[in-house]
Amino acid sequence: MINYLKLIRYRHLLLIAFMQLIFRYGFLKLQNIPLSLADWQYILLVFSTICLAAGGAIINAIFQQDSDAENKPKFQVVGKFVSENLAYNLYIAFTFIGVSIGFYLSNVIQKPNFAILFILIASTLYFYASSMKNSILVGNIIIAFVSSIYLLIIGLFDLLPVTFDVNQTVMGINFSILIDYAIFTFIISLLIELVSDIENIEGDKSQGLNTLAIALGIDKAKKVVYILSLIPIFCVFYYLKVYLFDTKLLYSLIYGILFTILPLIYFSIKLFKANEPKEFRHLYMILKWILFFAYLSILVISLNIRHNA
Image (cartoon, rainbow, N blue to C red; front, side, top):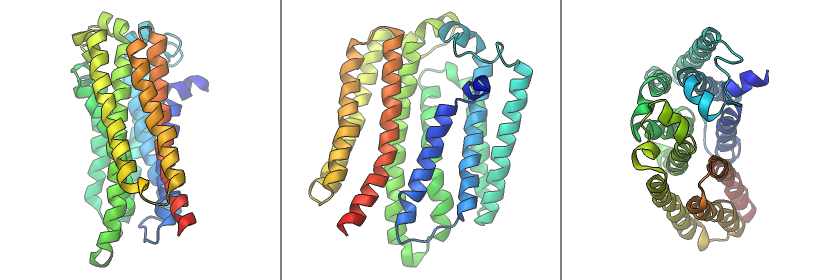
């Protein structure tokens, strides 16, 4: 069982599910606004995106068997514990379920064209694994973009269908908050991808891949990641200053400093000292935890607002 969980990257799936659930029940449900999906339908939406992400993880594992054998032999599943044929069948099953649910929900909200989004996600994950991964930065950007789509899909299916002229301003504010978090997700996910490429540089190089770390070398790639890491620091600082600093949301302000800004600064400092794969793995996990606490912040802010109301 543990090998199948590794194959679908269950920790990544749990983070996606946590994000979608916390934004629905820790944010949107606490607002005085209508939502288009019933609770059980929203759970289907979460399940659909998880299935698509699981399919993406499987097809990626299939195409990078040789790279995993050298970079992460302890984590290799396809070709070692699960046959390639079975992995393909699992990929098809997860992707089919994810897209099918997407078609159903698109018709539920009377936006049948939205089903294209699920096909686009599945296709993008496949082409990333099969060909785009070997393109400098392109593959990294694509995966970061898909990660942000998992958040934006909440607004598309739960807010947009019940947005009318009378509530357009309020719904627009809530949607803009989702967009802000999606942008943050994109930036952090891009950093995660770049750090992972640096960690796996030796194995990727032996497999003939062409990542940013291979093209520039570790030192220059670290400088690029460092510069990019400054963007979320300044963005979060600006966000806290504009929206929280002059308000009564003291708990939210402290939370943002302790669990977002300081960890990002820690990441930037440790990045310069990192040289070994285990050090980059540590930085990789730091970024994952930053995403987790960033998502949790929406609940902290919502509860802080209700407490001061």
